[in-house]
Image (cartoon, rainbow, N blue to C red; front, side, top):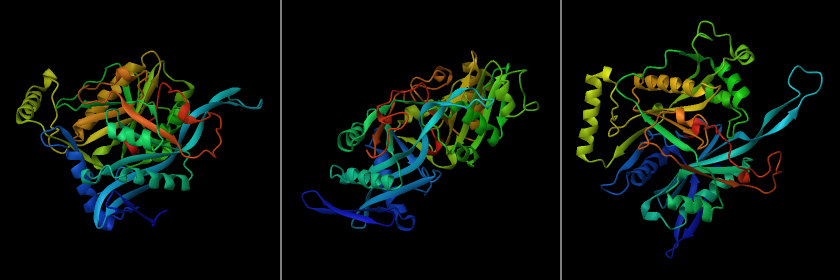
Length: 415
């Protein structure tokens, strides 16, 4: 459907709305205007503004396949939607090897599906309740089907009633997963990782082998994880091990590590969202801004006290996103805490104000991830839809009806 336009009449006055592919040469200004009016919110209320740095498709352009649509009335942009498609793990199955092999007789292997993701749906407040959002979703779903996607999903805040109703009541989506977005501020002082933990930065090929071996059966694991790890926005993959087991100088590579792992280890990768878009909190009173500034001044003046301080969220700020977080062993939580401290210091040196991650609500390592509850979303909502009934159920059946697992893999390209 690229290049095609869909025009339809809506409302009692039969207003003609055109839905077409986003054209950066003429649509950027109009899209940014809708983003501003949708994000700022009512006067006097706390709101979060997103600055896309003049690139409306920045949040999907690193995905394998993507599309952005705009809706317009006359020459005015009144709505937009973004979508992307990738291949991910939707389950696992038992694979049995033949007798002439050194591998185990059977092991769990991933079952993949082609998954579409919807994000960035916006409709101007002056043109809501006219069916424009519904038409944008429908048109994007057509493109998903044309490109072979079997499922589509979207993420929203649990209490975003309008969004939830649109997708579940009108578009046929069902509530699927409730992950947690955990956000931790970056302080003016550095954090001290545990002295009995060593953090090693892995080369992308070592990171890929480790992820594919240990995480490939995790729900939503991207089949093209190598593209994610080699993307310029990935600042590195970091492995935490007990001190004395391995070090950067004695690192033997992931193959030998997997053959002889330490008793416990942790792993995560860091994605630089700061170079994609920035955020800004608006609608905060002068008193609260002054209190926050005071905490930062005290933190900078007395760093040895390690006082928690509130970053400057009231000016545009960037953040790092932690993905591929996991580990094994009785001290895995300690390894993850050390990695989070390391990631905090990396974000501090990069001028970021927060570090964020998203994990399953049942994630065993969740309690080891430092975060401020007031900044976090303890229960995000993902809704999913099966796009075609002509697809075979395969090894896992209808994915939309499958129970949640303990972990999910959140692709940073879509955060």
